[in-house]
Image 1 (spheres, rainbow, N blue to C red):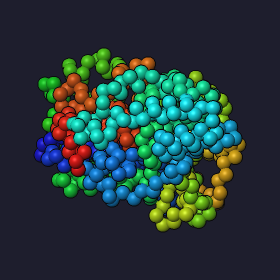
Image 2: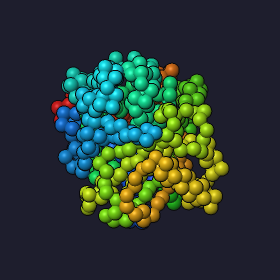
Image 3: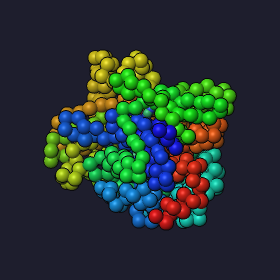
Image 4: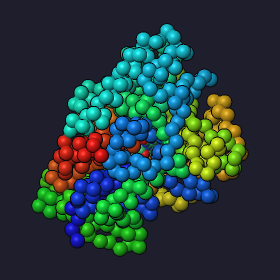
Length: 500
Ligand SMILES: Cc1cc2nc3c(=O)[nH]c(=O)nc-3n(C[C@H](O)[C@H](O)[C@H](O)COP(=O)(O)OP(=O)(O)OC[C@H]3O[C@@H](n4cnc5c(N)ncnc54)[C@H](O)[C@@H]3O)c2cc1C
């Protein structure tokens, strides 16, 4: 059997492309190397607790908003179990002893912070105007007109988020507050683009939601949609080669855990995996030039994340309907030259459970971590890194708890057990390069070089996922629409979504 489209990887990007193309009549096959589908959307179980990997909250899911409309077209919106975060404070930024709240809605956001920064009222209004300008680049209205994003976005890609904030407000504390959730995109001072910051902020200012019982439900629903449309979704199928003949991709070679390999033919291939890993398994060919390979090899990835899961005794930890970003010091942005091995910021987020909405069963604490802290275990695989790795995780977990203590984080309840994951876990489970959390850095000093186009020089090989456009549920969904527009035409697809 020859598929119309083979998709490598069942992350959000792969599953969304599979859903769109199978709904539009293509014979699609999604191949996933792991047992569980979903990539960063995976929810896994330890000691009877469900733990989320890479999805803590999502914006733009309200009626008439772009993610809501896209999920409606996928046929999953009404089946999602969601909990809206507190409109008065969906994120709380803790900075050197004080809380600052992000409220939903641009006006309320500015108004809320103006209470603590009355001298910056005009600056805050300027900031939210800029955020709305980026947010307005993508809208259901634009989909109705037949395009995903207005071209004006380019100018925001050339500006650093930290600089754009500094040009709106002068108070150094407020500048840090406005950059306070930069852990969401691996924010680096002077480097991470205002486009990325604005897309993410504007999406959450439309409203922020958590998935009840885990983000995996999005992946499960998309898998069902693809299968219902006649598509194929296979787990435990690692793609080890993308075959090219006469300047065209002809199919992929896969290997199963028992060592069985198989060649699957396809007219087109979409890769939802990191571009560097895609190139590593792509047959050498004359179309993809060494200069392109070199460009991809030299691009930086964002930092990875050290996650400490606190699994709580039942009904001991009151559920907090907001996230808290803790920061110590005078700069919330990450710097590559900063000394490693010290926690200066982290995100604390609780997972809502349907069985007991008043209490949290799991608290996730996430902090930036680069792979260079883990070089000692670089050549090891999961469950085979030895005692030294376990000791490292235990030490870093204790340090993170100490950091939280110093931030006066008041974690109520009894901890039943803990689990720590590192960038190595992400590298081995989702295959992301260097265990990076969000893929390629969207660098404002050279945005066009650091963005990967869905199209490649091989006419029938495409990219999708978090390395095209922006990462996160919102960014990846826009990328999926852009990738599938290569098959269906942008005007046709965007209108299909807009009027679903
Ligand atoms: C710690 C963390 C927290 C996050 N929090 C949020 C959040 O709160 N909100 C938000 O919107 N976003 C969040 N994100 C980002 C979001 O999860 C990702 O941007 C998004 O899920 C990426 O989807 P993707 O399809 O690009 O790739 P991935 O999820 O990385 O999927 C790639 C898939 O390809 C598979 N694969 C790899 N190699 C092969 C191969 N050779 N053959 C077959 N399959 C292969 C992998 O197993 C994986 O399933 C977070 C990310 C992290 C890491």
